[in-house]
Length: 428
Ligand SMILES: Cc1ncc(COP(=O)(O)O)c(C=O)c1O
Image 1 (cartoon, helix red, strand yellow):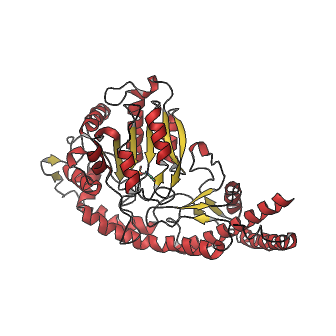
Image 2 (cartoon, helix red, strand yellow):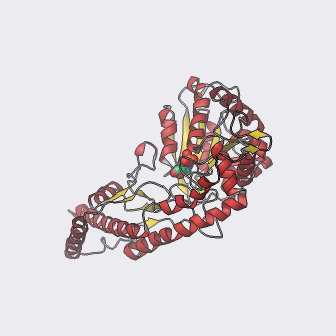
Image 3 (spheres, rainbow, N blue to C red):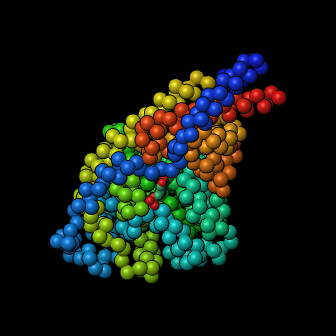
């Protein structure tokens, strides 16, 4: 379908460009300083968890069953915290380690373990030639940074609304022993907000990797982050693995970073018995036990999975108007122009915007010039290389509704002006 600018005569396009340049100048003159870049909860959201800080005093009995929180013990984390994490993930608590405050840190540690020491007795990846990792793209930039940090080759795999292109995943995983892993955000993917279909989850569970030390890094970061009472349903990967008998294929991660406090939540990992034994042995060499006072406070505050869900409904009440504002501003500003599409997530932290080929860098640069910081164009692709230069991640959670509205007006103006300029230069 031709875009509105393509269907204009040269004179109409010149007049439209003049109008858009004037609109941009008016925005530039406002001297705005707004940020739609990173996926952080808003202050209203972190405030929801501050009462957790009142639950511990010097008088609090810190015993968790037989475990004393205030001392060493419990290398897998507090029993009550493991129980809570297991309930959220739908797995057995014996297969959960709650450790530290960052799930990305756990993912990094397991990549480092595989790279330097080897998984479950296999040769370390670093001694097997150049390892490769599959990166559904656009995806989470920090995943790609972890593997790139170790010199592992990041290979983009196209994303669809049902998840990664599974024909390509199967072909690469099942034929190339250098392919050692894949990054997955199966629910409300960052940045699209897609949830993998049951068929995709089953195809993951049925993979027959060429490498015995291939692992799926199943980052369920947005497992409880629904915007609506009726959330997307994700098939439990471990239920699917039970059917295929491929128990050792997956490491699953999640955290309460965006439930309570980013950077001060609790992070967890779960995997098969054999993988957990391997992970435990690794962690035993790294530290005596995890930090547990925060775990204690989290359980005292959230109680159980039902408590987490009730808390997340409060987050949703804060976030829903922001996501709905994105949808409304983009539809009103760009809906009929034939220049852009965007995703319509029902949870998670992002919206993925797709502009004309060759426009994303220019749109982000122009938005910056007009006072709005966006995630860098290309950041959602391995090595920052968006082959179409068309994807832009919108992170609507942090700004106030008022700031977000203004930032979206700027963004819409930047998209239109860059699209019209591109059309004019293609005619020149
Ligand atoms: C997909 C995904 N995984 C992990 C994280 C970071 O989680 P944590 O704070 O637990 O390290 C984020 C944060 O944006 C994310 O989007």
